[in-house]
Image 1 (cartoon, rainbow, N blue to C red):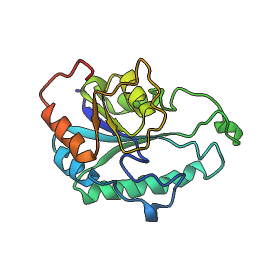
Image 2: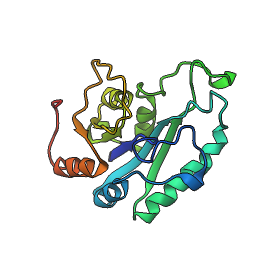
Image 3: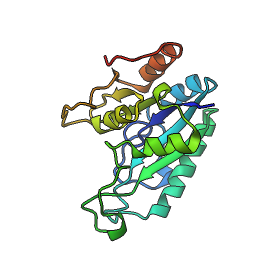
Image 4: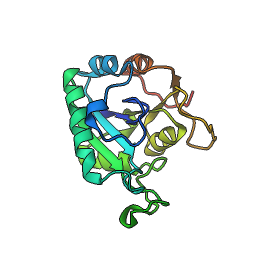
Length: 194
């Protein structure tokens, strides 16, 4: 039996964007994330974080530093009577300075590799799943994976480069609106882009 999921971009979507932060002490949920988690918990969704972490390839922090970030996110989900089911990140960046991570890959968004890996690992139905992100690279990754996509238009997308996979199903101003949309579509089959 395959599960449905809500995939979250981390920085700028699920939590406020503090560039290259790996200090758990200053990680908090973004406005409305608490309500979204409370409303969707118990509705058979798995909650998955997928995040580009080029700071590893750039030498800003080490891969093992993300263990504390994951633990903090897990504790924030627990406080909302929810559960973080998966934490996936891409450490790669083609122009990085750490050789083992300085390359192109299929996991760095806008590629869908992290979502596809999560689907294999956790037996997820990507077509019944949602991806929420704050830039069009997130939307593209979600669309390429076959998810329904929501763009959180909070000012973080600055380029607005169009493309075949870069049109979200929905555009929202806050995560409360995402909860409304997902709840209202629980029994509907969304097949056409808005």
